[in-house]
Length: 541
Ligand code: N01
Image 1: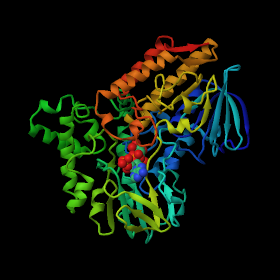
Image 2: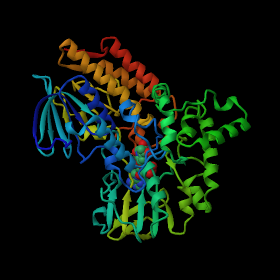
Image 3: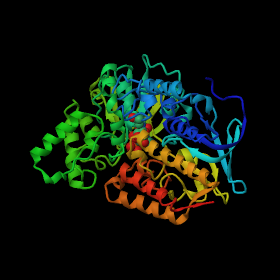
Image 4: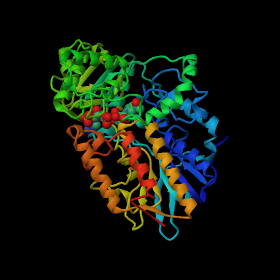
């Protein structure tokens, strides 16, 4: 079925969803079930959200299947993956499978970037405009833009003068880039940079890695999956999906119910070896329950990681840059990523590692990158793996104006206020999924999205049943939610790292925890509780 492309004024809708990734597709499916009029506007040319935009070399999910997929039986019952951690191409195929089952595209307008949404208090509707002039007047505006919809390119002096190819990873050309025989620089070693580096190191002529802060990357332990094995396990999928909701991060793993110092050094060693060998996020999520709370315990967790990594590096200088004696921040306080042979890349003769902490980028020249030591690194391609204005940027980049005309950007200029991590006062009938003050960064995406999608759908149904046209969080309720989010975070070590978790990766952005740290079960319970109490903290009319 072809998607909507011709109509430019959609008129009054019950709901408009922005974004066609996991969140948007799930919302569309649920809202159709209410029998209401609902459409999706998606900036990209196809389904997938983050998996549409992120097609850089090596792009792959750090969450394992089948927890990283929607729990809708119609979708999982005859879908199989080829790997435990699928790459972007297979994730895109999954979205096409979703369309073949749920026929979602017929209600999605692609190539439609929403640029403004103004609330009209006289009709309790949103006036929405897209870049190409498309308009709609939905009752409910549901932002499913993900946490990484606004990429960040640092203001490197001279970047515009570079004569080779330079792309941010989130705007990677869909047709790909030819790396054959090329000299490549990668700036940034977050989850994205690590994936690019391990993919390109073995194939390019020369690779220059420019690292500011080391990433505490842990082994992915990728495995091939076969169809038969997956089919056999499908009887367990409903239980697996139910258990996602009972785990702190919405996966299939729990923190170990003991403190680091409850056991002997030998016990710890054995335990670390065991969770290390499982791969995935086990070395963080399944670690001792105080690993992210107690600095001494955290240091022990770091040291085991450091020593494992150093064993894989031949050069003592590289060992100190990539896995320093003293960590720059607590282990896990900044997002570690999963790697496959990442560290071995630095043993290759064609790979050069630059420590930007000691030798920063002075400027980008027409033919390469000049570092502070006066050395010009000649390159043909620059990969900007420099991250995102995460969690809030995808929302604040849209001109969204609430009841009194204030924009969401203005409202969140000095700090984020949300209620239940899905709504914010002065912006009635607006919901956001996988955004600020929700488990977002600390959660498996589909788990968080399903909790929120179910909640928003129940809320809209409640309003329809009661003949209500407006719901708005109160200022008091969002003050309370914000306090709780910040308090929970202050109990751990998260504030001890500069990270996109807390906005400190973006110059000028307020530095505060942007995510709900309390875990999936608590978040789910709190949101349900508000609904069960008649939408406590909201004004409905
Ligand atoms: O972005 P990042 P990312 N000069 O912000 C460096 C998800 N993701 O795209 O650490 C030089 O983590 C910056 O340095 P520093 C995942 O949740 C998921 O890698 O600030 N360097 C850092 O090294 C992830 O956490 C998958 O010192 C500069 C890098 O750029 C999130 O997306 C795959 C700089 C940015 O790292 C974001 O990851 C990939 C400057 N001026 C990503 N400014 C999956 O598995 C920034 N940097 C789904």
